[in-house]
Length: 194
Image (cartoon, rainbow, N blue to C red; front, side):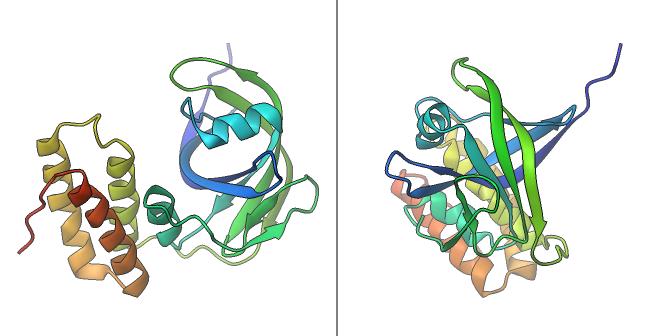
């Protein structure tokens, strides 16, 4: 029996809404046996878009403001048209993959869409994330789970992630971090910072 291998990538998924407008959302996607598994929560715009229009792009980016922005009401990032599907990819994508969904399982609380790679383009090299970029992505995941995680867990995690921000953040990372900290504060969670 073949062993299933799975890798999770923190990416931005861009799908089209009913009017043909690109909608970008951060998501952890998996690659299993040649398929990309896109698992949006229900309800969500990505779920609605993929159920109606079975194509999307996977954007690999290093501008973590896009991750933070999607969770804090800042979604209007420039896009470019795809080459082989009806869709768009983020202008700042280092690489983008164009997917055609071949099937989906309408499970709760997350559906699972199986995407086949139609096209992949590399636009710029990926030089790796620094600690601050990693911290922003992890904080964005925490913000996406506000109301699901205990407040002390959020405080503890943010306290640890703050170390990476303090040591390696540039302007983009500081801006993204600020957006996320504002969102946490709006949720009534106070974060102490020395």
